[in-house]
Image 1: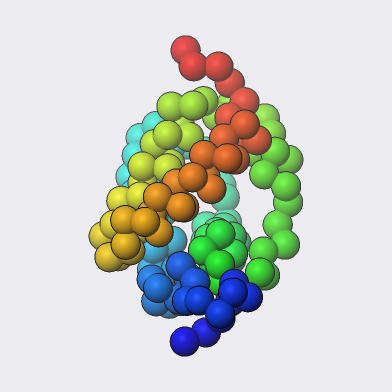
Image 2 (image 1 turned 135 degrees about the vertical axis):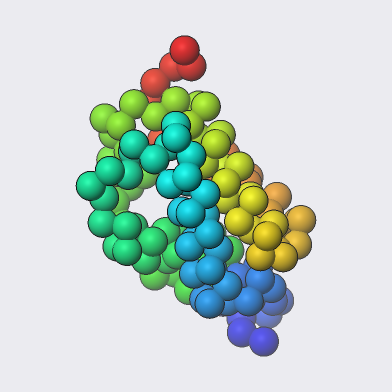
Length: 129
């Protein structure tokens, strides 16, 4: 058992299967996001392989895995994209679906959801219409 969280206990990262599982979740997550007509336009012209690598690092860190995420601050990365709370909610729902399909335990999914909820103020830039 790896101890990525420094507590001696198995991390959520390890519980779901480590790096390979996170990469599979990210792959499925973006399949769902890109199939969503309301979200797909945000990704036109985006380097998806780079974004997937970046997202896997971020999710790994959120799950208590290796802290290798060095991306831009969320507010900066999402500035000017006109993201609404509805868009944000759809993204969270797709990640929950991907985690659920991968067999992540409900308590792990709840912790990821709580971590995402804490970022909403940095990502949502437009009021609900």
